[in-house]
Length: 135
Image (cartoon, rainbow, N blue to C red; front, side, top):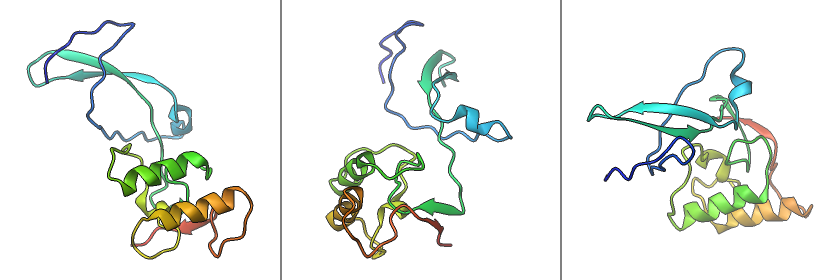
């Protein structure tokens, strides 16, 4: 990737995805907050970027909540639609939570079930409920 510069006020944007672990009792204070991270590059240069963290319970998930914000919203359906057409997704996208009908694939049916739930129409699935993550 060509270095295009950047300043403290206007940092460069990179398309890479990084995963970071945030441990400790105060981890909730990091959620969805912008934190400037300094990255030491392989060519000994440094760059910085603003990142936000999401903490996921590795043992449980909320059915339909694919972005991990602890709520099922139309943003979740948008992410599922992006998944269906193989568009880039954020690292925190949860495919297990996206499979609403439990058929081991993510499809437009899953989107439809969430959309029905969002407008208070009946569904045969417990969208918004917490489930134990499969082993």
